[in-house]
Image (cartoon, rainbow, N blue to C red; front, side):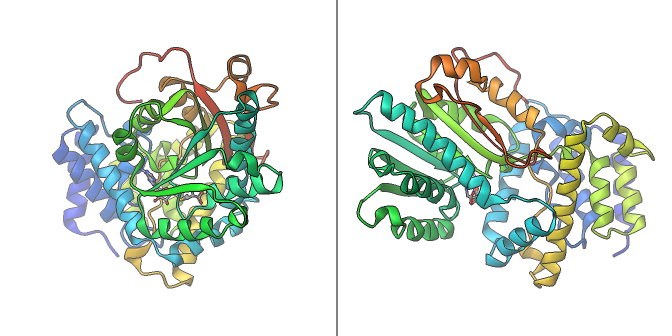
Length: 401
Ligand SMILES: C[S@@+](CC[C@H](N)C(=O)[O-])C[C@H]1O[C@@H](n2cnc3c(N)ncnc32)[C@H](O)[C@@H]1O
């Protein structure tokens, strides 16, 4: 599809006005990016889906006035995605992970999240023989992450521990929760026992805002936090955890969305026309050599991770075409993935400590722990599970990041 005259003039006026902050201009920017990228195999989705700390590189200036609106647009875009995804979309993801050269995918991330969560819980349970535990699975999907905890408990003779736990599965997709309910009800651990689990159809924010403060002993989540643009969800989780509450996070990381110059490589590989690519460059003032300059500032692991992610996004696009997935049922490729260091910084800002020495000293769940970080593939930083707990004091922080 070629560029219309109105698209060319929108790019011209926006590029002169960047950075933009008024809601009107932000809306125009999002629509313009959408129109530039229209027709590529894997739709780009809203630019407000990327982590908030990267938005300034995309010509967006966050202010007290526009912050709520940007967050609303972002949440709406992710919501649309849950609503449009079908079995075919999930299959395309599984296929793309395999073909993009990742050795590990969501199943391994779930297993590692399950193992780390249960090992922490086992120590807490051994230290207090009568304690019962309230656990939360955030973004439970079709129950894969909780099933991984059940698997680990069953295989390691820890059914006694499961019996002391009450599981809450928080997931906005009702359909996914129905599958989760079926999967967990028929799980081997429940053959002779009745492990209490309750599926809750809600988003993390709404659910945790409604419940009383400090209820959870352990919250775990796998492959979910890269759907959150602003870090306010971490404040909510901090509030939802008890004083010695633990958070175990399995997720995917990349700094690919940091700058539009990096994304232009994705667009080329997804088959954007030269004219449209030139408009994308004009809009974000991308010059020849910008991408190489950005890559020079990255470590080799970061570069490898980003290359894998480019490949993954492109492979999903191919898979959508091969599987004949309707254009309006395809997932969007911009996401809230960030560099692992950025995530750790946000955890600290929200009042969590990820420092193993501190955790070992202060928390029964971490005593003698060899590492609270599991990098699934040592040659890249794409899939990592880590655990943390509340720090003594919450640091002061700014509103945006
Ligand atoms: C990639 S799936 C992961 C599902 C499961 N944890 C797993 O690892 O298999 C991401 C899930 O997060 C859910 N999700 C996205 N945003 C959410 C939010 N704000 N609160 C709760 N769940 C959310 C989506 O509906 C989706 O089911």
